[in-house]
Image: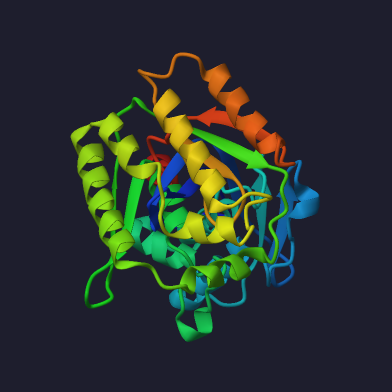
Length: 339
């Protein structure tokens, strides 16, 4: 079965939930990205069209676009040649480079549309979609078989809470589930322009980690995962609000703005002890993610103002939006569409 035109709605995602750096990711119900693949009767290759209020910040170069790169890799695997098609990416409020996994959503939507248009989705499982989509992400090199990051593409593929790992044989293992509904999420977009780009901030992470910090982090990750599976949101939050690895290094390298790790940790501790919320800096960008218990947070406006005021005093403007965890991902929506 094949289709001349396919449209998939892809959820956004938020990765690096505190201590779950490059390992945990959640799919978000908002914003979403509509990806449409339409076969063309003339021409050759992939044409990209962006319909977005952020169009000026998005590329339409197929050699640079994450969706086109992932689709090219898929076609190579499927041995699809001499194709001419148009990929359209449409949103009303899905900014790039704001910690919402836009490039991952572009890749996931393109791969799913490509499979439905040129193959059969029943021959591909969730893991296949995640792995194929990762070849559109930054750092990937399809010719050398090097995948990009798996966290954001997992969130967009599956929705819910995702755990990405490799076993001792370097085989990828993916797990996803829906956490208890009282786990709340808010995203903060900052206007701070990070210095040196993502790769520069990643190099900072190569610095040695102390044994005691390593042991603390492993213990907290184990405890937090158990609490989340058990439905203990409060137990999860108390384990994830302090990160001893990526946030410390990047804050001290001024990767987040005009403050260091000591200032950041003091603020994070204040937010947790005063409001019971866990503030995380998501990824290499200076954008924030707030996790909280919906049953316990009564005055959200006070929390929002506290967040904005702290960052504004350091010259950083912040827009905070509460969102829901997506109950399904793009893969689920594709299956429903075909059923």
